[in-house]
Image 1 (cartoon, rainbow, N blue to C red):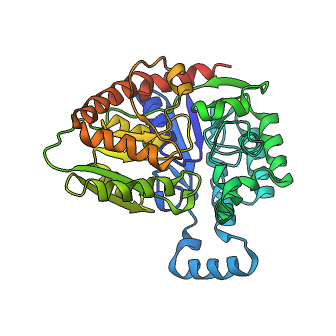
Image 2 (image 1 turned 90 degrees about the horizontal axis):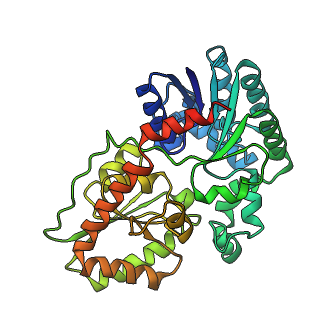
Image 3 (image 1 turned 180 degrees about the vertical axis):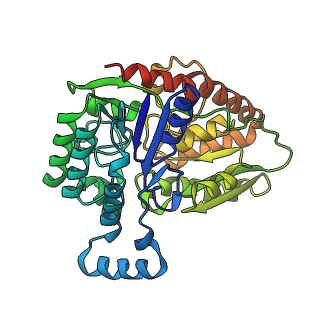
Length: 378
């Protein structure tokens, strides 16, 4: 089967491709690499001109004057030039409603070409889109990534990208996509409620993790316990990083001789992985109910991850033991949970093993690729 995957924000599509290829399918990924993360793709729409030294200078000047990022236009233009290679795929998957990330009218034009030139198109809900943004802004969950928006005026700038999904302009894109797709599915529990009532909702299919290329080795703690926090300034508030930072300050003072704290910012994906490989504990985010991609990859390596691991998650997978630490927007709680692990290092080893076992059972890329193939039979 010839399969086209449009967009890449987390390595989800790369892992899915690896599973599908191993099962004998031909897979093409087209995407811009997602900025500094620089994920691998087959057909690139990276804004090379806008990101060059001179181009970026022009880009910044235009943005300051007009608030328009010319890189988004370049994404669309480069996608358009690949159009002849984007025909006659048996299945196309969009990683979200606006996977090309160009200006809205151009996005719809290019998506119409995709719908016209191919057989079946499916939508993956694995981040913010119109329905997710609407669900969150209406406060339909007990807490969410929108909490800082409601509570902290300084966070509002970071949330503009979410509010953009609620605009009339994007609503046109949303309507176009839902009119033409064969079905939509959620990648984790956080995205089920916003879309489960929709006619084309097919269910949840967990994130694929390529366990064959992620080495697991039981953690050995001979000296200090290493705690890693990776910060992307673009998601500082939505991930609740301030709670994690404040907790680490207390931990550093409380356990000076027992811990080593590593904090890294805005790293390319490959550099990010190198930085956290030596860590025992990974601090991911506090506003999720289920794990995102970074958390899952860390769990596959046997790390203890502070992330979304709510009761809904435990019930869905029928878990009896902890495979991750449910992180909450509460500094005292976070300090308590980290302190327990520092004072009981054997728990780190036990949870790390359970985390790897969980990934192999529920997220293995070959198992998940087969589930996608079953969805695509619709």
